[in-house]
Image (cartoon, rainbow, N blue to C red; front, side):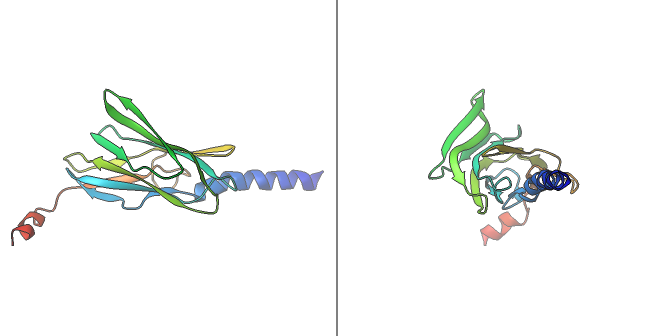
Length: 161
């Protein structure tokens, strides 16, 4: 009886630790204000041994336009409010737990420097991981963060030569 309780406790502990190791991150965590930028979300692996079957990215309010890149084998669904995309979901796919993949969105970035959080919901067979916490290095489920930087004032001068 005690052995089965210890096994159950170990399985529960692993179930809570494993998703945290599968951080969802941005391939390029910085972009220039006022530009078009591709945000590529990397999904490290599934939830424990379960494959990922859907990825939902919530678009920050400061983003004026968001256009998803289609992925073979996945269905796209856009949530909109007042003709503005508020979330993009890739669903009905199958990303095995021991593999990774990338999901990309073309963004029109705000004109001023800022930091944007993109909450992501990773749905697996029998589990859901909500990557929506502040990325402070302490939280288990940090949201991907994009740092929007000021344009380089010297960049325009280099194009003139």
